[in-house]
Image 1: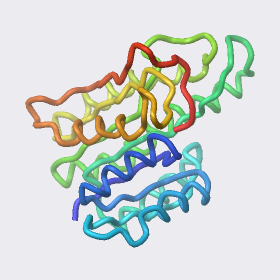
Image 2: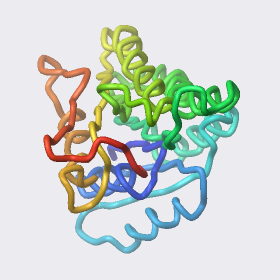
Image 3: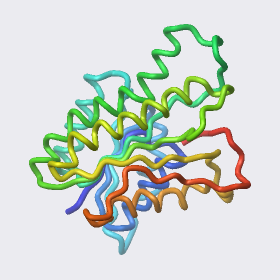
Image 4: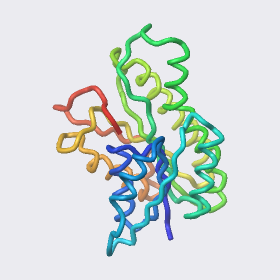
Length: 229
């Protein structure tokens, strides 16, 4: 059975991507920082009929390398090597230049960028051995915004990381891309998470000769600052 792992399974994009993948018949392993987030997603899929849904969850802090890799190993043991790995974790807060300490900036970078690097470095070799796979990282902030400095820096890092990973793993058969969300995520708006989730599915199912490394999800009337994922 095809399977996926979604890291950063919050109530917005993470939950929407999980729903979309499950309804497409994939078994989905989700990783979130709190059990409440896991329960909210796995509970919503309990007893699903006719879709082959299977969603399992594990808690882990993406900044804790040992716990994150252990959680990934647990999900691989339960579901198999993923066909799709989604990294959606981010530390979203409003902060301006000079407002945060150096340690706070490093803490944000650890969530926004390093966690993705840890997850991919841990799973990509097994995905390569399987012969195929997709790695998608949630991006944002196509233009840096001073009111969200740490996140702007992190999303610039995500863009660079995506290019680095693509150059390393595309020749081995892995599709690496980022979905750059250029606005505030909220249900019923131009940035409805269920609509955004469709980008992840489209990227995952793209033919090799049409692979994209970045999809920018934007709307001219949307607000410019991000919210929960």
